Image 1: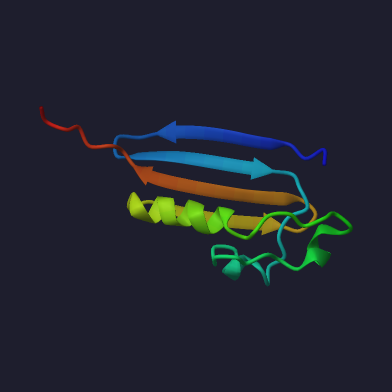
Image 2: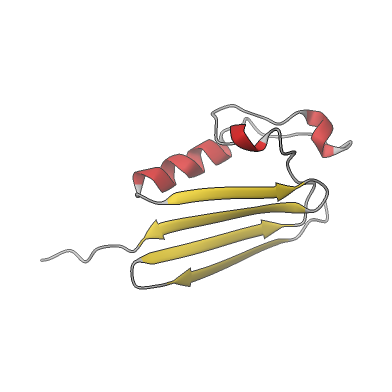
Length: 97
């Protein structure tokens, strides 16, 4: 509650980048290696009294989509300060008629 989310995009000749940042509760270091695993949810204690919601599918689906597009997603987080997701996708190739 009260967290802010900022989304920025940039494009270069071969890549489009999305940067998603928040100033929420963050993710503990021990959980970061597992956040892309299906159904993984960090320990509820990380949220310091906040109810942990969801089914643990959002980040695994985001990674699957990035992988299917030959892209990548990288997550970094600082507990108590927020999380940052960097998504890089290759630019679409023009199709010939």
